[in-house]
Image 1 (spheres, rainbow, N blue to C red):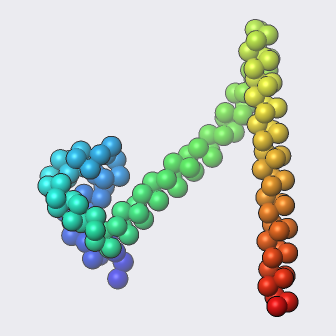
Image 2 (cartoon, helix red, strand yellow; image 1 turned 60 degrees about the vertical axis):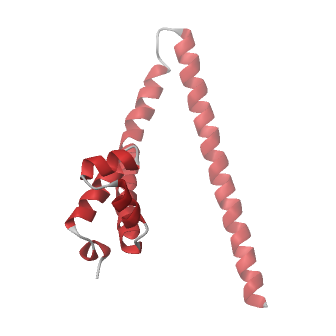
Length: 127
């Protein structure tokens, strides 16, 4: 049975407020439950699992939105390389170079890590 089916409507409401609140105090006020009740629920494994599932969903959705915006951000940065002010052009070019080099560095590290992982797995296989 999924965690959400094991929880009451009040608990599910509290979870939705926990996700958008900056503190447990704020969440308990919004959900109209005491802080003690909220703390008690936070010790419940089903409650914690559902809270994590919903938080993870919010994070995934936010990351998806950022991924969709990256193209627009890159286009904007590239347009700045043609700005009238030399300082703006220089900063935009510097940003492009910095981000490109960082991307290349990360790709290199990932390739090296993959190679190390393959070697470790091969050595484990031969033992």
